[in-house]
Image 1 (tube, rainbow, N blue to C red):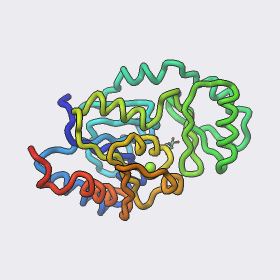
Image 2: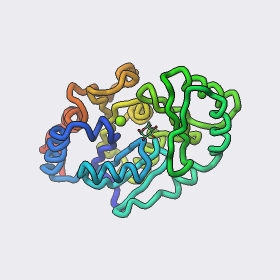
Image 3: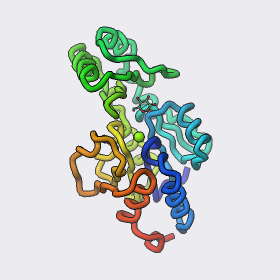
Length: 245
Ligand code: GLC
Ligand code: MG
């Protein structure tokens, strides 16, 4: 795969997807550019669910698909799983231990998923999620804890998450000094928005992101979803004429 020069790395639900007119505007703008902007979708969904959304919404196929909250990376025209990342995500990962520990925590319900790349739950508000977090630490189970939208709890392998996966993807597939924009709307996007790349929090973001700390290249859009991405792309990477072939 040729190294990427321009990259939009975006969450799907509530970010790339959610405002059809805004998405049309963003994609038309990208089409008008002399250079192609590569797409990385970085989603909490599992692969089949992400593909359903991509087909259902008629989204362009991405160059890179990061699924399951950053625990899986697929790349290239066939979206083949990246085995280097898979290897990292299976070292030190004991989903059975997570399940055992979670069994004793009231107020959480296991999400049905096709495999155990991650173990995810629905929490009745923040308190059960906090209890699970505490229990996992008390048991000394290596993991990454992610809480989103006041409900979704993702327990990931140690060093997992959208941020870690995106850093890996950029290191492997992008040119040094590539033009990157990272976009998100909820808690599972936080770590990738904090990597230090030009990043956008769309205006419809969940409260957990509205409270996120600022950094120099973090842009808070006034528009929701893809319209906010376009606004941020213009802010960081300028007009079409600024992209040199
Ligand atoms: C998506 C996934 C869900 C996950 C949530 C937060 O909604 O489908 O499994 O818990 O994102 O990451
Ligand atoms: Mg989202």
